[in-house]
Length: 192
Image 1 (spheres, helix red, strand yellow):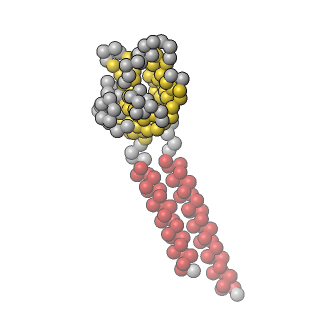
Image 2: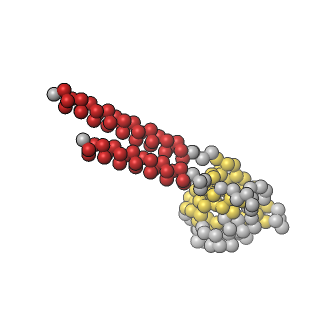
Image 3: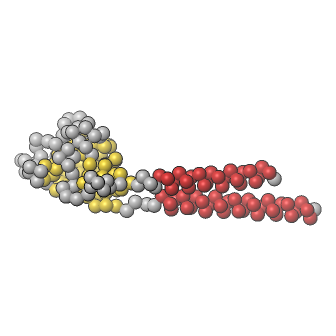
């Protein structure tokens, strides 16, 4: 009987531990943005475009920007669609700072850089998207691409409490059933 009680307490402790970890990770919230851009080539015969999801930290209210921490999506250049493999660290390609501004212009002149599954603009799969204050437009770091459109739309982020709340309910339900089973067994032993 003591083993059953100890198991119940251990399970309840594990569920509470998961809840505490989930609640503390909520303090470092994540923001998601759908992004899309399209840049015509100088020759006018093709367009480079990309779309996907940017993952960022919370808005820095002092600097009015988000730090981009992840990226997924696809990029199409010269009729070939490439998978976006991941974000490049700041300063890795094109002096990127990986910042998304909270107002226009949406990007800095250093922009953000990412890796694609193909050869990219530099032949190594690296791509940099930035804003030029001189030309007042968005573009990719390439000699063949003109300025075009860049947009982001915030996405809703699921609340971490939904998952942790469900775990607490399941753990408490299991613990309650085990407690009732132990009480029933004790009553049977007293009767018999």
